[in-house]
Length: 303
Image 1: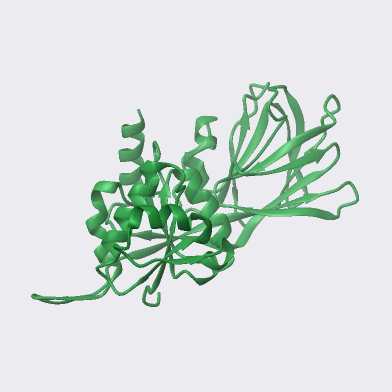
Image 2: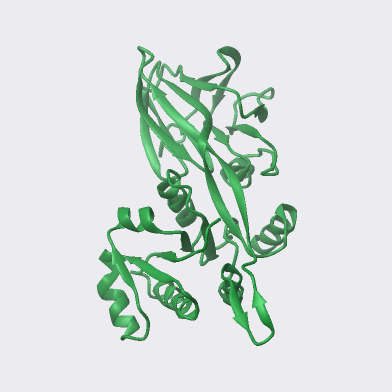
C-alpha cells in the first residue's frame, strides 16, 4: 500500500481509560511524519487531555473515514467490527489495539506500542529501516432482505456473521435454508448463524460451529440450540447464494442481526439472501504470528 500519511484514531473517548490509551498511541505517532485525526465530536475531550502537546486534525466522522490512510481502532472486537463496516467501501486498512476481553481481531496489546514503528519508513543511526507490515484480507458478507414479492428492501455488509432469531425472547422458530435455489434443510431451532471464516471464532463457535481458517473460502451455517438430532453445522463454498426463509407460523416476525450491530425485522415469508461481498476488510499485521498462533493464544487467555 501507499505511504501512511493520515491516521484516524477510533475509540470511545467518553471512557477515560480508552481516551488515555488513544493519547498514548498519539504520543507514539508524533515521532513520525503523519497526521493524526480524531472525530470532531471528541474535540473538547482530546484538547483537555492533550494540553497542546500534540497536533490533531478534527473531522466529522464520515470525512474521517473518507480521508484516512489507516484506522487505528482501540477497543474490543465489537469496535473493530463497526470500523470494518464503516470503512468497507474505501477498503481502508485497520490496525486493532485490544482494550476489550478477548480482542481476537486486534493485532496489538497496549504493551506492544513500540511495534507501531513498523508502519513507517525511517532513518536511524544504523541506516534506513523500511516499513514492515502485512495486510491480511478478510471476506465479508453481503446480506439482503427480500420481501414476499422478491424485492430487495434492505441490504447490509458484515465481517463476522448474520444471525436470525426470535429476538430477546428465546423461542423455537422455523426457517428454511436453500443454496443456489436448491432446498437444503428445514430448521426448528432458537435461530441460525451464517458466519464468515472470521466470524467462525465468535458466536458461531459458541453455538458449536466449526473454527475455520480465514484462508478457506466458505460460509459456516450453524443452528442455535436445534430441536433435532439431525441438525448439524454445515459449510458451504462462498460462491454460493444462501437463502433463509422465515416459515414460522407462530411468530409474525423474526429478527436479523448483522455483526451484532445492524438489526432488521424479518416478516413471515420474507427471505434473507447471503452472498460473499465484493468488499473486504483489510487488517494490518505487524507481528509474525499466524491464525493458529493467535487462536491458541487468545482462547487460552479467555479460558
